[in-house]
Image (cartoon, rainbow, N blue to C red; front, side):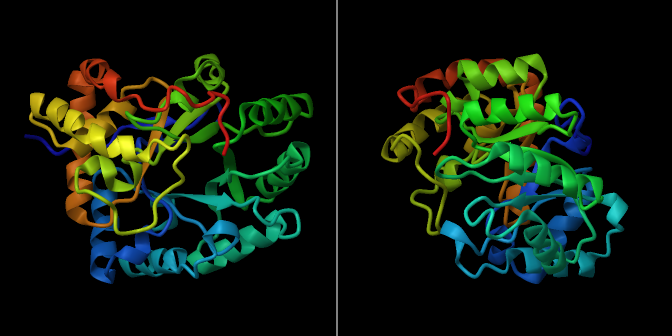
Length: 320
């Protein structure tokens, strides 16, 4: 069998071409030895998937003294990839904004990760009523200064996403080009609901799918030993019960449950990129198998996994 090469798709209407896989997310690099991190970065480069998601997480609900971004920067320095040969997506947080302004966040994050710029950033989720016009203006300042290339949003309520798109169009600013949303076979209402689906169909945004394995639950390995993402709609207990169905579908194609869950996400035409937190080379190798699986059987997998759509009762407009 020939070596799998990770294809690229455009991350939004005016966004960059990126591999369909992005590695990183949350505290991924904290969970690896230096040798594992170096091997994963090099392997990602060899299969055309050198696209990494990192952030400075120590604020708001993520104030946990994580060193994940520092460790990523150290690993990248050891491997020695030229900056032109990899892409990085960072984050801007709204938890302490505007008291902690975007410029300070970016300067801190770039310094910790030993980077000169972010190719794109995701503006994080929030509680309350942020000033979307101010957010768009400040992000555009960072773009104009070359600190970031493009931007997307993370689990925003639909009306705020719509407001940001309308404001940037009216003011001739760089709009958000992608939405990073929780998306998996069990949690799909926000992504496939009429509001966000209309943005994807119109081409205004593309999808960056995140939390596709529900913190590892869909791998079939039981209760995760680490902190995982928010359980919007309180469906987590039912997710555990749905794993045997996922395993049964995977067996029909001689695939792993992880490959099958990722193939489900990749087979949505809206998906430009899929984000996962592989912390072992063996996990990344297994994930690569989702690409030919999605190409050959994506539509069948989506049909067979219809019974595990668990968040149909959750409002489709999104948010937390």
